[in-house]
Image 1 (tube, rainbow, N blue to C red):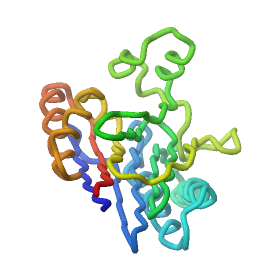
Image 2 (cartoon, rainbow, N blue to C red; image 1 turned 45 degrees about the horizontal axis):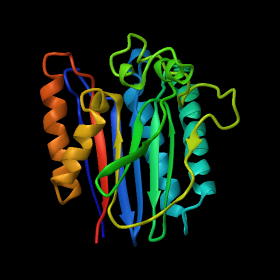
Image 3 (cartoon, one colour; image 1 turned 90 degrees about the vertical axis):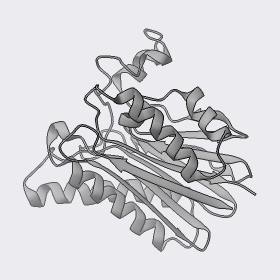
Image 4 (cartoon, one colour; image 1 turned 120 degrees about the horizontal axis):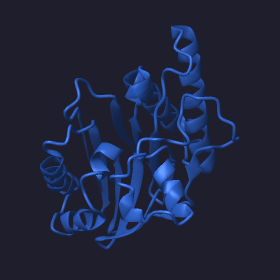
Length: 244
């Protein structure tokens, strides 16, 4: 059985530029989460455009494949760039995007930017996407450690996003397809969420709950407690559980 829950809140900001969407049809699930870049304006529109386009493309796919994932990212990028031109906001609408597609047999994941997908098996984290950010690059070359990313002064400096001309053919990253199994769980979240919760806390919340909604609720308590008084950014998350 596959269950999911989602939440998106403005935090201490005047409006919410995150967008989360989940659709399910005949055992096919599409979960997309995007974090619009408010510093450039139009972030809320950018995140909604790429999320809606991804959901549309996934909904038209008879089966989920790597090609489906590529189409979601590339056609969403095209739609966003076209909207920029139409509105006269060239380079003014940018966003991150994480995408998870699941059917009865496999799970596909992809991302661009610093919104993350965490993967869990039997209550323990087995991996996460790597941010397209300056701090993550510094981790890669050994200048800082992984736990220093959360509060690094350049944490919001992103190296890859949607809504700019892509120099690389595929700046988004797709993970190898995973076989769907029992006791799997997935967390898609924006940086406003993962900034205030540690991976060990994610695991603890997962282990003491039995549904995707309970898991998300427990993590939200931590995020909101730790973020209080810190001028919280928008924070959003989607939880997905594969249980018996």
